[in-house]
Length: 344
Ligand code: DAH
Image (cartoon, rainbow, N blue to C red):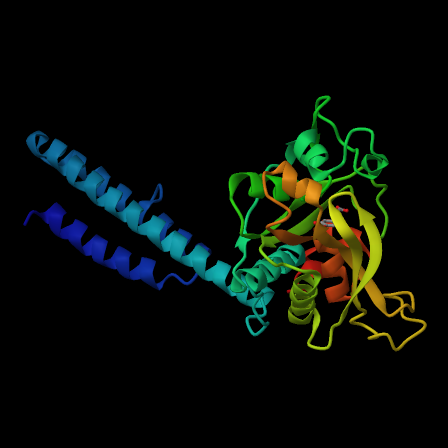
């Protein structure tokens, strides 16, 4: 080994020992200056090149440069080791590692979706199919086929968001009755959940966009008792085992007889005159129902002398309000996770 090589090897060893021992940036800089600084050891070696025979000089220069490069690499590694140690020390003073971790936020089903799913599951168990249809409907399905001719005053409450003279955002899910019966011979048993739109001013009980769930059963020998049984079962499953239902005479052009359906107020069970849920009446209104009108059956090619059926249409948000004892329907569209995640 040449004299220079021996010196370089010795220098490397001492350099590495010092670099690894340097506790902080200042000490590291001291090592750098001592070896690589302007009057450091390496400079001394470079000066010695001049005394070598001219033939050996380029080789010696390269040998020194290679070692310097390696030393600079070592310095850089040591530098980042020291910086990291400082960073970790800082972290330890800034972060309380005994503090409870932030739990990841898990999403949950929207309460309205939940009610639709559970009502759907109830009806499916009883042999009903779940169907969905368009939210933009021709007025034929929305009105005419449901025994609401264009001159009928019942249109007034439904006439809402028209897209053309004859197309509108559906104001109820009842068009799905017609679509189902036109596509299938009796017997039919369906529920049709979905969005509806009405020109209602928004308040604690009304939204201009809301969900309904429609039900339809048509077969031989179907009577009002079947309707009452199914709806009582639905209310008991979703609202509690003691729920009862009440039918109040009403009018819908597509049913005869027609009724408004109420269920026992799940909050006071009818035992409080001051209940803020039912206003003290003991009952909560869920929607409309009735026996399918013969004109509707005829319109879809069914024979009212052979088959009969019942239908109902409930507001899903109303159901969810009742179920979760919420006082304002607008909460459902506020998208406040703190509110929504309490309801499942
Ligand atoms: N479609 C009616 C509405 O939105 C509700 C309704 C009443 C649906 C009676 C029915 C029914 O299926 O039989 O006001």
